[in-house]
Length: 388
Image 1 (cartoon, helix red, strand yellow):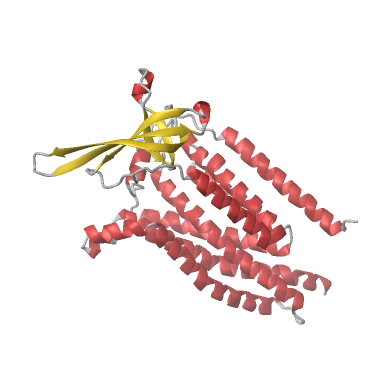
Image 2: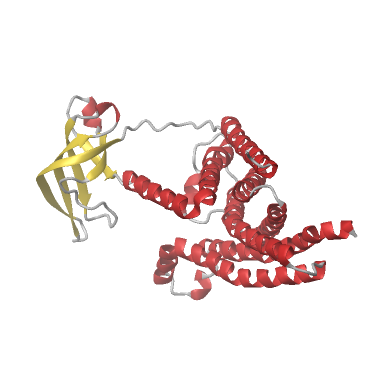
């Protein structure tokens, strides 16, 4: 027979899951953007059956430089869409004028192809678009989820559920709300609160340590958000960090996007996971201490929580900074290679925003420690004070 505690935990778990589903479903409906242009291009998965003739042509420019243009003709079997099972003739175009281009196809290559404009005129020619990498990524993701279930068991299942809701909330609610023209600051606040409550409650259940982690997490994220707003103003951030932001500014949307708010939202969402980890680690450790401490006092628990937090601060700050450096390593290298002047380099908005993200996220972690430790010390000694 299921114990009352277990039954109540299951009910709460199901309520959280149900609320998360409703939030994502109705949020995606409300935030569905109205875009001016819809992508009408058709793309299909295919497999290269044979590689045929290779046409090579050399062009010489007025300045004496030359480049080579190559057209690789091949036969492919379409494996998706309305043309599944059809064998078509296609071509891969390569040009040495461009430094970035796909690898040359081979027999058995899994690719993405699209009908060329000539196909509409009755000529059976398709063009190579890109290699099909999604199938491999899907299998890789499945292996990861299976390992998560094997090693994590019930916790692993909760992690998968939480991860799924996080992905759907970001891509089905948060991003569409921005494209819809809703206030980015408000959207970021709503999605952050949802992710904090949903993730911690699903992964750890509704208990004292989860409540403490939620409070600490909200405190850390709130501080990070406020600091990010202030620093955006002080550093004169324009929001045009790189070409992606410039393209976003010129995108044909019903409402123009506030690029400064996008920078702010990226900082807050980027720091959310690390702050959540720190808050939960401190809360969980303090819960164990409270249960096994003979003389449980507010001062002792607070001191222990701060000591635990100090150990966590170093590793999580390094994790956050290394994550940002790793994600922008190519950009940093490129800037150093082509900009020898250090003064100019460290005042570029692209670099400034990367540094700002790392520092603000670390400050969020820093303030999450005392917020979690204080509230946890209060909660875990509250029962003892009441009994007195």
